[in-house]
Amino acid sequence: MNIPDHDPSRDLSFERFVDLPADAIWAAWTQPELLMPWFCPRPWTTVACRIDLRPGGEFHTVMRSPEGQEFPNSGCYLEVEPNRCLVWTNALEPGFRPVPAGTMADFFFFTGIVTMTPQGDGTLYGARVVHGTPEDCQRHAAMGFEEGWGKALDQLIEFMQARRS
Image (spheres, rainbow, N blue to C red):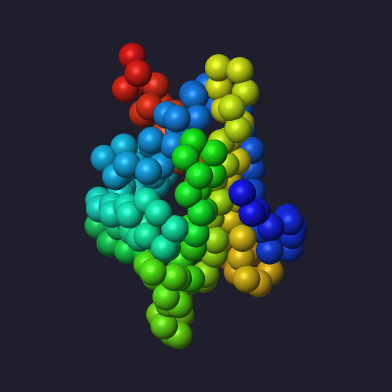
């Protein structure tokens, strides 16, 4: 796992103990049919997902707002370490091809890092988003990063625990 040092001016992150084994969290992040039910905070929904789970492979989702507007998000996996670490970026297309200039004019580039560290019967879950500039980091924070990603994690836990019952 090659995770960069934390830069508080450009990175957003949180950690939480989750009462699920790492393999359940991994499955929820890496199988489209398990990712779509929880991936964005309700009342938003994820209406499409493609995963090619390998470095250079595609990670693509389409999120739908409560008003019906769709937001496609595409990226490329950088690191895939089963049950431990998943790293992707929207700055690259599949095959490690740079996203063409101007493609993300109304958004920002980032790298997402999800870590899973087994602890007893559960997992220490880490989520970190690395931004290119402090301004992009501030924009993402203002969008509600911690609340949104935290709510999505709550939905992941609820969904996966219901599947285990």
